[in-house]
Amino acid sequence: MGATDSGHYVGMKNNAEQLRGAGEDHQECFSFSRLGSFEKCPKAYEYRYILEAEPDFETTIEAYMGTCVHEVLERAYRQPGATWRQFSAWYEQAWAAGGPEKARIVRRGTQADEYRRTGSDCLKAYHRTFYGQDDGETLGLEQEFFITLSNGERYRGFIDRIARMPNGVVRLIDYKSGKRVPNPATDMQLRSYALFALREHRQDAVEICYYDLRAARAKLATVHADDLPEIEAITVGNINRVKDATRFPAKPSILCGWCGYNQQCDDSYWEA
Image 1 (tube, rainbow, N blue to C red):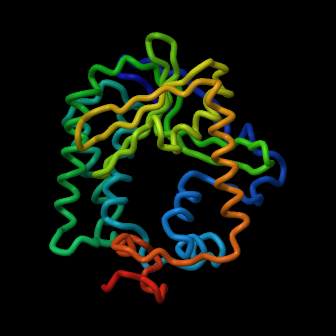
Image 2 (image 1 turned 60 degrees about the horizontal axis):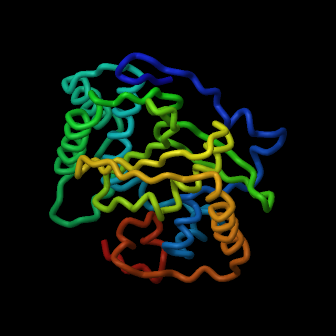
Image 3 (image 1 turned 60 degrees about the vertical axis):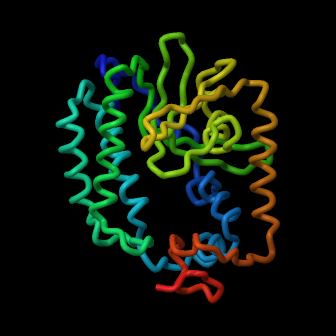
């Protein structure tokens, strides 16, 4: 698994295996991204999760860049004390290995190499601003978890990094390479992941952190145990809204360009 740049790593057993029961692998499971898909466009949700349609393309160039950046940051905490030269070499290897030519470029007039450079700039800023000064003790990297909610539904997530800070507080970390980074005090991704973390670590509070890689800044918030009932109620409500849906109308917008089903959808705003 991983380590801090001091070389200290505390292993955390895979809770995906711990929390799965016999036969549960085939049970329906919800996630933040799945619920978000329904909010953005019910029609896209229907294509992916109900019809299980094959998407028109594997990924977008933005998502491809983000995946490569995440691979480097995961590797950096598995091999502590990495230099910027190592960061850069790992990134170039990841970029070439995945096949950027397969990724859809939506923004007209842009080239894949522009996104490659953006990803490199994100990593350089992180290495300069955060990596060498990181004094957190890594507890988990790309930590997958499953929890059962109050309505019996299973909820799944992946946490980029879990760290214990010097003051003993556990921090959930998510790296954001996009242009828009949400406010962790209101955004439900890491707030919902705290449902798992607070139970796992039996603490009164956890910190949640979005690293805005383009701006080289950390956006922090705290989730307290007293917040969990509200967070769970919101998550359960979102799941119930999806499960109760009988119609899946399209929400045409400029975002259709990034949808893997835009060539199959009669309502798509996108024109290739």
